Length: 261
Length: 73
Image (cartoon, each protein chain N blue to C red):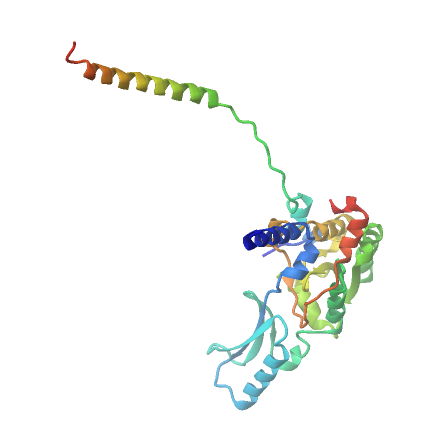
């Protein structure tokens, strides 16, 4: 057989494989996280101390999905750091101490470990610290996951939006949409792929029906429509995404083929 | 920018996330082709084309034979 035929057969195999891969697995294997940009705005030439400081910052964040830039602007009074995602300003910091753990944190590491272990997704429940509101959503979440055949391959982490240790992570989540910071409601973020956070369910929207729709979205066969228009925001994180464990989802679907439709 | 969810009273008008709307409407699954019934004009077109072809052929042949046998007439 001619080598060209082999190539065609292999290509067809890859294409057919891509079409049967589930959304969560396809995104983890193929979708590179979008880049953040950290910009140091200053209005005068940088002295050696600041140059050194910026070099340290650039070195510290170089393994994450972020790039560092310095920009001269004459219309500012004091220098500052701006964190951008695409063209959106996420946060503004006056000094590097405010973003010491910008690219990693204990909870983010745990979430990444779960995703790399083959879990379908991690659901981050961002709490308001208002017990009544938080409890309502949490009950709906527990009920939905308890009844779902995929409940065992979904990890839930609770996080207070007022957490000091995870303040930067909470801030990144609250920037997934531009009005979330002003909404004092519990929020449920589906995190999948290489730390991509879906636009959250919030308040009364955290219902069993919507949680099941989130699960359905992540377990769906990855159509071109999804690949071309992936929702969500990539969270800043420094980690390697090579060689994840096989998706646990496939095992469940193989054991019960009716779940794969 | 993507939009998000419903919530308590003041947030009722807030739209649901696009991924959720798409999922509800089944937009993320592979859509089957919609078959639409249309009027079948193929027979009519076929008659017209054939008629034109025959008329043209007769006209061309008539002119040809007339020219060829002009002298005999």
